[in-house]
Image 1 (tube, rainbow, N blue to C red):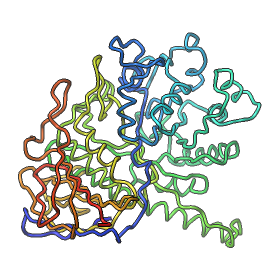
Image 2 (image 1 turned 45 degrees about the vertical axis):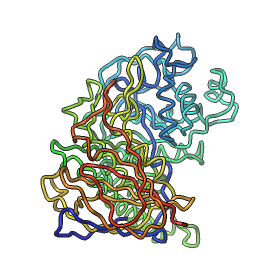
Image 3 (image 1 turned 60 degrees about the horizontal axis):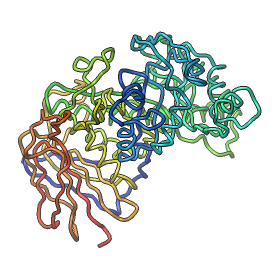
Image 4 (image 1 turned 120 degrees about the horizontal axis):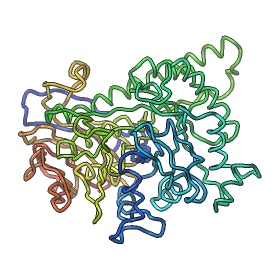
Amino acid sequence: MTSFTKTVAQNEASIFTSPNQAISDINPLMYGGFTEHMGRCIYGGIYDPTNEHNLIDENGFRTDVIDCMKELQVPVVRYPGGNFVATYRWQDGVGPREKRPKRPELAWLGTESNQFGTDEFMLWCEKVGAEPYLALNMGTGTLEDALAWLEYCNSEQDTYYANMRRANGHEKPYRVKYWALGNEIWGPWQVEQDTKEHYAKKAHQWAKALKLLDPSITLILCGKNGHSDWDRYVLQESIQWIDMHSIHMYTFGKEHCENVTSPKAAERAIEMTSAMIDLARCDFDYEGYMSGKIDTSAKKLSRPTICFDEWNVWDPTRAPGDKGAEELYDLSDALAVAVWLNVFVRQAKHIGMATIAQSVNVIAPLMTTERGIVKQTTYWPLFLFSKYMRGKSLATHVCSGAYEGKTFPAWLASTMDLPLLDVSAALSEDGWMNLAVVNISEKEAMSTTLPEIAGPVQVFVVGGKGNHIRDNNQEGAESVAIRESCWDGHGKFTFEEHSFTLLRWNSRI
């Protein structure tokens, strides 16, 4: 949580925080990834068996992608979609590859070869060190299909689909914990788009059946954007069975400040979704108490968290989805991603998981070529946050000027403050303070008073002096990276114009 006081001086600021102001744990699942059968994410991204440059292992997996996912410490990966999942038959993607059928793919109007499926994904997750998170087909799929997939992945019993897994060479169950009840079913682009009333009823029944088969799983409800009547209704109807509520949002802006403040809309959405979760819990408790269905002496209904399982900067006119959505991100986009991550740290109390959409090639921080991999500008804030912004989220107060121009969405400007310094803070388990600061101003550096610091400060900067906001990283020409230095901690610190800065110091000195 970060509070804000607007100041008159645009180029002077102050930030106040303390290791004694912990407000919430930061869930490591906040730094999750997402791989969908879309564009070059799977084929040519994480799986590239025909590559001629020795970039693959014995399974056809890109080793450079695996190395980067490990570097990012990705804890969980969502699969196989996304819109793709609405017509996906998981049964097509298991067993001998030569027998797997090719199918028309309706989400992105291609052909799915099914050469990469459940078992390949599980092996890839094992190599990356991430937990799998599977999305169920609630478009053309049936509850029978969903139960069969859960049995295939998790069952130890002597039953049909568990034995199919064994026959495919996998004796032990995968124990997949996270399962999504569909994807964006409210959207007109979906195969089998549905109403909130019918989806809520269906989700309730599916969840009940899935937890009968495996009570240990975590179920994620299909929400919308966190501030819609769909979210309110499906939560109220399904709160009894679900563990997380999914919301999706993509942000962008044609102008720099519009672009970099756009992720603040997600902060408001998280706050509203959290209120809807509590409203649904209150209604459930009240109705259960009045009907006698709830034993008031029993443990109260647990509080679901938010699963922000699609988030990123994405301008669909710049990178159309049906053409592979291969965004070329610039420094402004990197700063927007840093603001996104600040939002998650500030709102850590409510976030159970977040998975950037997507991890490779498709609106991604990583881009593969035949010869290697490019770390886009957005890779670097993701790397710094995942490496250092862990442990406890800290209460923080910022005094600075504010941005008052055009915003996307338009309602954002009249809904919340937009400080020129966007800030979050975290306390690591080893006592290190981590202060993440985005100076969104395109032209003004910010001389800033910081909390009292004893000892040296590690400084990591992305952007700022020497970079233009439209600088990007391409093969053979990567102009945006991390600059490291050290500061003695005395006096004011100057946050460079259009920069993301991470400051680290030992609070136990």
